[in-house]
Length: 193
Image 1 (cartoon, helix red, strand yellow):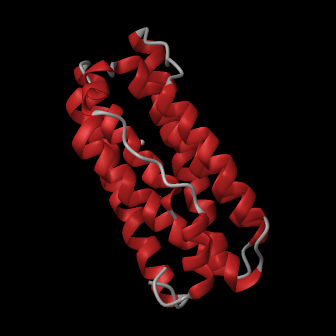
Image 2 (cartoon, rainbow, N blue to C red; image 1 turned 90 degrees about the vertical axis):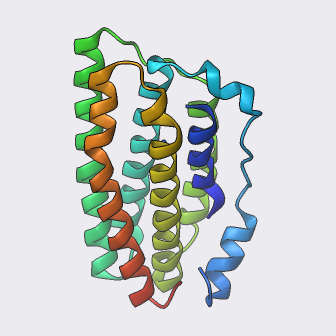
């Protein structure tokens, strides 16, 4: 779904279904989020990055909670629990780091946009059930993690001015890559793309 094309917005400012008509229809109804003008990129700082990271991880935790409750396939529920556990841990580490560094995450247009888009996505996911939910959730997770990886590589890491913050972002990247590969594999097993 294009919801976490919203996280690609992180990349512009600073963020986890072919063949299945139901999944494609759901993505087509997702609000497209466009990246802001390039000059916005220069305005990001560590406080903005911190808020975006916390928001993006919190969103995937909430999506995982919905999936843990609604998924029909035990593999999807297990994946959802992994997302809850891993993204909660990243947020705890991020909170500890920003506290130690004296950086206060600053809510910004990107974090607000991510939250608004997530609420719409979560509402759609909550209206689905069974195999339709499983495929839609996993498709969302694939796109989410692709967008987060792009944001990490293209914007978050390059724009982090604090070395420790930058290193933290670099160190969590392999986990996001592993999540993406797991989500892609599971989506394929479920009959998605």
